[in-house]
Structures are given as structure tokens and as C-alpha cells.
Image (cartoon, rainbow, N blue to C red; front, side, top):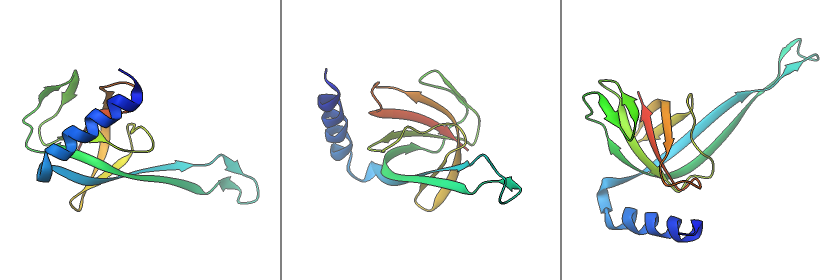
Length: 118
């Protein structure tokens, strides 16, 4: 299946899920290299994107798509984001912000991710 077809299929599935799919914000902060003018690290660059997610917040630990999930962590099925999530990123859904701990690129080609965040 081509990437564009895969993206369209994931979007249709998310559309059909209705209220189970929530808007999500993904934020990454990257400190820049040493800046001699500041005599320290450079400014922090922020990257953000909006997307959509299905949240499985009541997880009791175990495994989700090969990722260890600790009690109290949420499992997020994340799509429609501009950049791939990675550990340390922040995800905000329904006013709750969590830090990404683990990520699996489920569908390949950056179409659908499973994110473990606490």
C-alpha cells in the first residue's frame, strides 16, 4: 500500500471513531549548541504540531504493540502529525500533558504511532 493510501485509510478510521478521537498537541524542545555570545547554551528551539489521537488512559501496565507500559501511563494511537514523536516530547490531550517515554511507528512511513506517555 502506498503511503498516501495508508494515510487516507488511517484518516478514515479515525473519522469513523468519532468522539473517541481527540485533538492532540505534540511539543519538542531542543536546546541549541553552546553560544559564545551567551557564554552558555544557545536558545531553546520549540517545534510543535497538532494531530489526532485515540487515548487508552486506563492502562494497568503490560505491553502495547511491543512497548512496555507501566501502571499509570497512557497509550496513545497518534496520527496526522508533522513530525514523528520521540522520547522526551510532550503530548497534550484534553488539557493533560504527558511526557513521551516510548514510541513505535506502527504503519511505517510516519502514518500511525503508538506512544507510551506518563
